[in-house]
Image 1 (cartoon, rainbow, N blue to C red):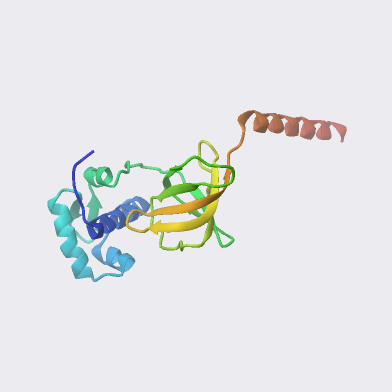
Image 2: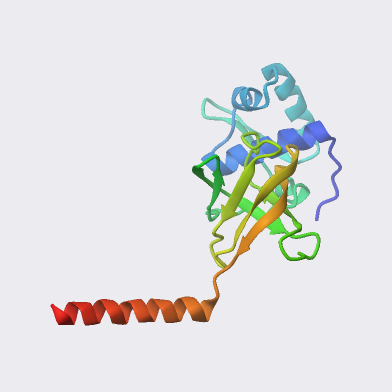
Length: 193
């Protein structure tokens, strides 16, 4: 991993750039970043010069230009540059929104129905508030669903800490058997007609 130390404001700016770049796949204009961060465009341009000088951002000239993160930017943020990231759903206030989650970690062992989970998003968490009840999942490979109440938000790193109230993952054999049973039931129903 590359050894670059960023201030909180630099890290927030770089995270915003990376999130938007991953979503659009094209250079991001200073005006767009300024609007997302509620900052002055001139301030964003000045800060981008500093990020360019340490090698985490490159400028792209021209009318379709803007700023792009370098590979070093992904290293500094602890993220891999994924071309086609899988999405999961964020369920909040009866809405299901597709999101990209980098990782879900459980910093402590669950005791029955208690524990915490850190959810690291690959996009802004500004729509989430402390006290919200949320659920994330199912994840693409394991079909894990994690739900709970938001206890803390780190907007600089796009992370949310929740008190876990729900952890569900399907059991492979049970699902496969249930699927096979349903198929048999459907085929026998068709045969009876």
